[in-house]
Image (cartoon, rainbow, N blue to C red; front, side):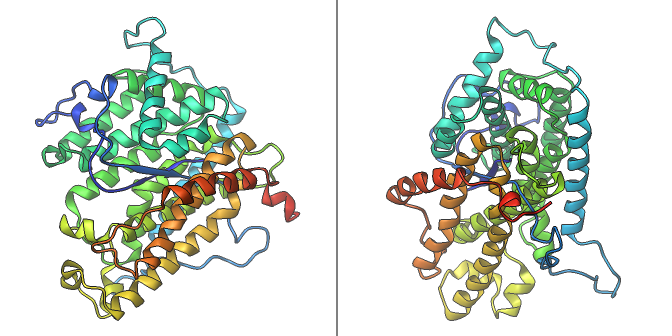
Length: 410
């Protein structure tokens, strides 16, 4: 299924090196050098069944906006995103029945073994910044493993445009240029060797451009928006920056041949875990984001809890804050619970890295609680010992039958 590359704090590898201060494209230093691992991503993902399938109850509505102030019905962010899910599922089913058109990177002057070198570089970047996940990918087939590395690197470079060391120089025009570069990549005209790896991946798997465009839209949001009025707005942001990666990688990770899960449910579950991961990331980084002038928390829910932006900037843990955080953590866990069972629907070779990342990332919520909800000055993290313990647990879970078989679903 999918990897979800959840955005953490502090700068590291940068695709901003690919875009100059004036917004012109330049070769990225990612091609030849490694930069200090100051900024980290935690990749997670999942596939599977939505809990409201097969006669089960309908899902809870997480978005807090159903009507506008004038009392008029509006389409929620969840519905907008689910429309994208349905489109991706339909494209995958259609393209699996039809050979993928050959769009391999022909326009780039690649040296002998150039693609192998490009994929190897992507693997080095993944290993450096996502060691646990990288280890798990080694159990995948070579073609899938290399494709996941290529997707990872493109997502990382894209995120670094607005969060990397050159973020202050990135403009909407620069992001427009990055999107044009994406379009060229999808038509077999990569700009550099890392682009070439993704372009080759696209030629081998039925991957659609929409989630990639949506991730760039998330970067645009970071340039212009520092507050979110309600969870409906925050949900869309989480989709843009995390859920999109699940949709990108579903065609690569693969579904178990014996699975009874529908394609739509596979995409929906990948999305659910992406939302859970990003919410966890937001709750972990409240203090760090506040120091940058950003508050990724629903403003209406803060007000209902008797809190304001000023309370966030002061960074004092009060009972009001603890109660607010308990509700936010509960919501994140609801998304994890909605998504977790679908990991078993993956092809077996893809399950271990997904389970390892899922288990480790979900423990961050436990660490926030252990810190007495002080996410202003304390950073919740999972220690090395717990990480090591999670690996055999994840491997054991990867051997389970798909839930759709164990539950006798059709």
